[in-house]
Length: 190
Ligand SMILES: [Mg+2]
Image (tube, rainbow, N blue to C red):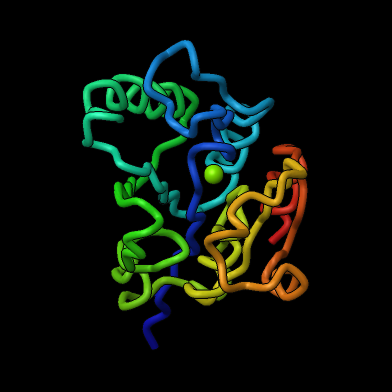
């Protein structure tokens, strides 16, 4: 019998999860770039001690419009990916939705429109995780059929874009923390 090794995935948000969110929700200059404490070290631990596939999933509202031109986003974004790579952290894919909330696009988190390939192919979705700092990231986990690691900055972000009731969100949250070492410790025990 052929044993298929089904890959588990970490669907990782960018802003507020890997790097700090800016007040205007646009990281369009290097001055605004700051990694979350410990994230490089701990994600590196995860990458070198597990076989999770790393997939970045990020909403970048209005990217490519005059208010948020691609050329202000791309250098910082590429730098982030390079910094991660330098620490042995390689994303197999980066999915960026550029729509605004009011457009209600199926590709925008919590929608799974950009991620259907992971549902159709033989990935171990049930044992995969979304790591993010908004309730919409938790709802994405629900929609994908996996669990969430909720990075809680204590701000209830994303509540205006979710149909998930806060009291129901805990059903989909495997770990709630603001500490990347706790995330790595948790994931390396799974
Ligand atoms: Mg975020």
